Each structure stands twice: as C-alpha cells, then as structure tokens.
Length: 279
Image (tube, rainbow, N blue to C red; front, side, top):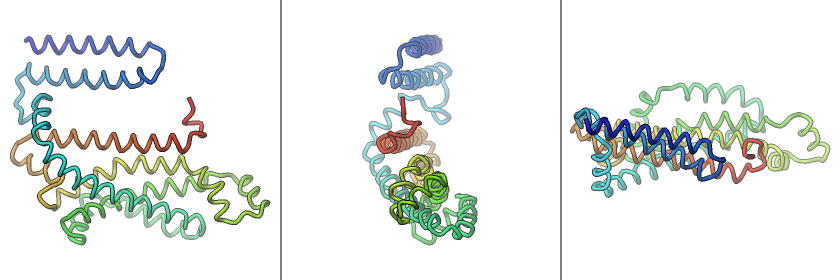
C-alpha cells in the first residue's frame, strides 16, 4: 500500500510541476525541464507500481533492478554498443545515405532514370526486413558487414526519395534565372538546388537514424558473433534475464535519441535560414 500511495503522490507532484513549468515563459530551461521531469515521473511511477503490485521481474523488472544491472554490466554493454552501433548501424548509415544522395543527383541530372530507378527502389523498400536480413547474413557473413548491408537496404530509399524531392523544390523561375546567367549544371546544383534541398535531405537523414539502429539490431537476431545488442537481447530473453534485456533497450533508446538529436542540431546549423528553424 505504501508503494501505491507513493506512486499517486509522485504522479500528482509531477503533474503539478509540469503544469507550472508549461505556464512559465518559454526558455531553453523550461523546454528541457518539461520532458525531463515527465520522464522521471514515469520512471518513478513504474517503480512504485511494480513494487506495489509485486509484479514478477520476469514480466516487468523495476527501474532500480534495470539500473543496477546497467551499472554492473557496462563492459558488456559497451562491447555490444561498438559492435551494433559503431560497426553495423553507423557504417551502414553512412554508406546507404551517401549512395542514396549520389544516386539522387544522377537522377536529377538525367531525369529519364527517375522512371526506372525509383520504382526499383520502391520495390526494395517494400521488402520485409525479416525476409531480407537472413539472406544478407548468408551473403556477407555473420560479422558486422551483414548488419551494415541490412542498414544500407533500409536507409537507401527514404534518403533517395527525400533528396530527389528536395532537388526538385526550386521553381522554374529560379532555374530560368540561373540559365540566363549561363550557369552550368554543377553551378546550379551547388548554388541553387542543393541549398534549397537541404531541409529535405536532413529530413531523410533524420528518418534514417532510427531505421539504421533498428535494422542493425534486428539483423543480429539472424546470426552474429557472441556480441551485439540484438544477440544479447535474444540470448538473455531465452535465459529470462529481462533486466539485461531492458538495459540493452535503455542503451538503444539513448543512442537513438542522441543520434537523431545530433542530426537535428546539424540541420539547425546548416538550414538556419529556413522558416522551420526560426523562433
């Protein structure tokens, strides 16, 4: 009963503080404090509910158990992070997004390719990752290379579509003006089309951040060395060590949020002139 009373108290305090902060002048502190306070409130309520109802840790471990396992397994978590995020997700993200960007420029330069390449890309994007992952693991082996290949397949089409759309964002009057200045295609691309396409390009990059991490983790379910976040999750679930599974989920959530936030900050620095970045 004490835990349930504590949970209700935490909920009421968190609600009151969030309402108060939401009514304050919009500053950087309040914009950060509201989501942080909301997250801490949810974690505290989670702890109180699990302890109060005596829920089996196999079904839902309390945050205190997950935190203890996180602190005692930092070496394992770091090794899994390097294998999955650095080697698999990040390398596939760079290769996939880079290849998609170059393909989009070629499509923009030779419009007839759009009728042939985009339908093929749409077909590949529609393939289920559950079906493609074991095939790519067999092709590229059980190490990080196959996970990077899965990530390339997942991020290529979203990045391609957004970049192609961005390169076509300029209107005819702007392109005609560049032609009256006798600007070549590379000059038009660098001085007009790429700057106008930046919001679309960064939209594709942000979408691909989450897809890259998901693809790398899912691919490890179909074969990997004895390390990696996907391998650890599938192994620990079989051993009913759900605290370790949740620790890996925490790492994935932190990495995914940081990855997306980093790209968003880069977007803000590059496209500061765009209306979406004002205010």
